[in-house]
Image (cartoon, rainbow, N blue to C red; front, side):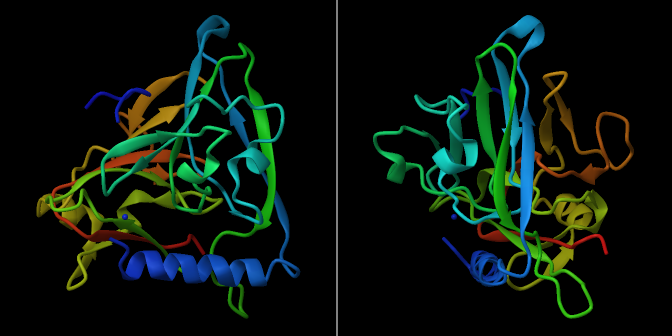
Length: 241
């Protein structure tokens, strides 16, 4: 797989649950408020750098221009997302922001940094997960619909928590069965190669339970590339209590 800025969701129960959770979090915003940040890195020697990012909380305003602020240069396609249903990449354009849409928890994005020094984005939002009366957070669902009419496809997913979660704790469902991610990989539902980009080094690593070629955790602020070979799957990522 070519891991660069050049490569270019049938919403089911997982998406519905995620949207309901997000709406509930926003309603609780008056009681739970936080500020989230993400560092965006340049390339070596101040060259153009690529960053694969995800939001750490539920933004009160998911508009890219609000999340990135005035300092960030995200126009002209520097900020991109992947539409899994069409397998097309969309770049943010200030004169037609509706084509890009908002930035939601669980989505992954690529961002180019071309100012030579990098910067930090800050945004206000509600916390990840939906804590109950005892402070326990809910599982988060992320849909993996695949390309419309095909058996699977590529997805840019964002880790939906502001804390790390062991990869082996993730579940995968096809709507009938729910199984551990390692079983789903063994059964051929999805690939076991989940690349992510380490911003400071600009190195592409991969999720690795054995800690040989990458981290055994899904980590805050990280986008992962997930390829499926079966349509209409969903990830169920449990919180680390």
